[in-house]
Length: 213
Length: 213
Length: 213
Image (cartoon, rainbow over all chains, first blue to last red; front, side, top):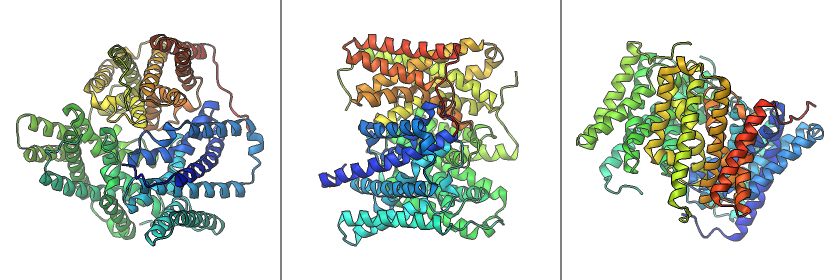
């Protein structure tokens, strides 16, 4: 099933990108869990789910089981170490400016969207669905976190978030269609996602809602 | 794994039935999302999840990965197009009589229950479990929609709904056991589900609850 | 993929342990569903999800699809029979002392944690992840039950519960590393989980929470 032409270099890049995203998202999961008054294990579970839930969901959906995050223990170690560090240092971590957190989150979103799209394409998923899989990789962990903490997933009603992941994935797929080098397409996709997300927060862009009847 | 005797005609029928159900359920998902005050993307996500969540769940459970709705882009296009159309036209869509919506929903339930049972049987799932898989296909999308919108899934406490799907799937499996032509068994199962659901609404049938202690 | 050296005796033991855990957890699911005022089918669904959800989640994650509980109809029969019996007899069932229920639940947790770890190891999952899979097997059903009933999963903030499953799984994996007979390692792991859980309830042990900032 797996496209064997996906070379080692791309694998290594995917690994680095995945771990960077994992650490960023585990941090956010830990903050949300601490705000929700969970105990140490709850913080670890929510960190893990936020960081790796999107990728696990993607892998189950594209049939890449066992998911990477289950097969390879380094992912869970990254997530748990980050969650544990935030738990211990949260007095300091609380002082990170929210603007910086937002930018880190946008970076995590971009990294995961690109990595997810790349993986779906390498499993011969049709391009249109690969865009959805990139989006799910980016936003799935946050949605699982919200459901565990009993909030309506923030991606469903908030400002442009999933839209940014969708846009970045689409740019990446389009770039490859236009014959760009895969690496260039990935970088463009990631930048598109990141830029759209940051601009949406700064300029308060929102998607339209259906007006009340 | 897949039973190759399942012929092309059955596949084509399954395809038509699946898409009809997808469109009906995407409509309902979009209505629920608009009522929940979600933005455009939220409406699309909930339409997608309501329409295709049951089938994706079934496919993951029977090991048919990647699920049909991920492998074949036409399913998501059906769901998104319907969700988008409801979003744009919801002023008109709101005026559809609720009785008609209920009947369309019962039809969608019957279509999905039958299609889900058929697919599980074609993957050599034991008949008793195939009935459960048909039920999950019918009600899974609605349960995911309710969880995303933070309601207790309506199927867990409401009038006869999942029961109708279960009944239709059971009739279909029983019909095949009795040696009926698969097509006849499927039609009987679908009619049984539809009729039970519509009668339950009209005559206010409910399942018993355990009396308070 | 499956380690063929896993012998028949271990399979049979796993089967007995799994069914004992299934019945205990189906009972609890039925109680929670009746307390949540669900109808008969809702009680059945929640019994099923509580009893088998953890194992299904584990099997999907380790790539053992279709999950055991789907492939083998005896699991769902155990869960449904138990759920139905509690529904009918709940007036009597309500009178079971809560201490006894807690002890039965701790036993179910220990059985599932050990069975889940064993299964993950037999699918060549790395030991560290096998511990997580044992934990998920133990607590996953309860978490799904809580989400269906719209509670924040109790495992995320309550006293030592998932921790006990994690501890038992870790003891089992460690025992095997130290060269113990697999059966001995499993018994030690189960006892460790059971003892930690019961002591935690009796002595009101809790995990630390991050102090408010």
